[in-house]
Image (cartoon, rainbow, N blue to C red):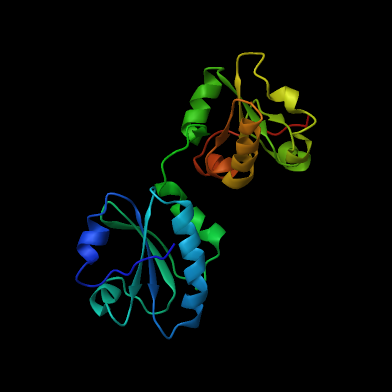
Length: 217
């Protein structure tokens, strides 16, 4: 999927007035890393079609926009949401994983995704059971209160523990989002009704929510 160019003349309409979050890829014809970045950005555009808008801006052909973003090195990536700069990457070539994480806060929340505050409330209401899928040593150091430890490499043989026989849906979490989300997608295809924690244990800690120390299961 080719990603179209936005110019000084079309920037306001195509970016600032966009109903979708916009990923901007600042490039130039002479920039070799920009050419390496292009297929990665186009792959992201394909994967997130309908959820975000992806555009390129040539810094030589659209100097007014480039100046407003204070572009000094390229490639650079910016996310504009609701007409405002919301995130950026200015450390050169960005791998796909980095771009996806840059965009994650601006994507629609998945139906089986819980934010830390929501998970904390559901735990207090005894409606969910947090499942820590990190390795046992990490779990033993610190984990979400009340969680059980079910390392990723044991999920298949211990999948019976994910059945909510006690009426509590299982909510998986890892250090960050990806591992738990990928596990939930796989488990959902197998018929399990499970959810995952957005941002993982890192987000939980960053939000100042309680943790406890204990032994692995």
